[in-house]
Image (cartoon, rainbow, N blue to C red; front, side, top):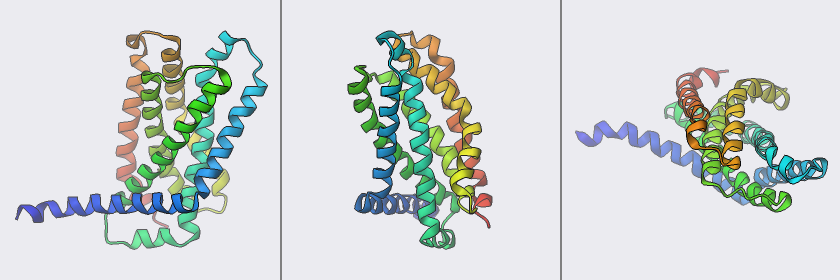
Length: 232
């Protein structure tokens, strides 16, 4: 009897795991998404590197802003591409017809999108450190990047699922996404800059708390409304 009660939960997590495995294995075979997003992100970093001919102090002060602009643009491309591939190949309809809770589809796509974004960020950080001669291996900064990425992907996956149904999905997603993620971008930039400047964590707690609250709220909202969003 106990195993029967737990079977829906096991089925839910099994479905989430299957979607994550499908996305990751498909991407690591083709490398289409990772290569495109990585090249774009590196180009943005290089453009900023040559455009911002600043002294060391000023360059340090703009580091967090440059990083998050790069993460946001690269993340948007990744979100759009991941859902567009499902739609173009007819896989999205198959996922929606599967006998699983549709929130499992959301969490599977969100976690795989988060994995892609974290891989890109793990490559961007050392490249940025070399180009700008700045040490970015700060545990507080890495924690902020993780919290900010979770919130960005939570909202972005939901809105990408909505935008992919339209013909203008490439243009529509940034228009929908950027106004919604302004609070998390501001909090992430402020907290990141604070850790890089060596400010006490007690002064940065309002920004960190905002990131945590944003993550929890939007994950809960996405869980509740995803079923309606993907209905055509």
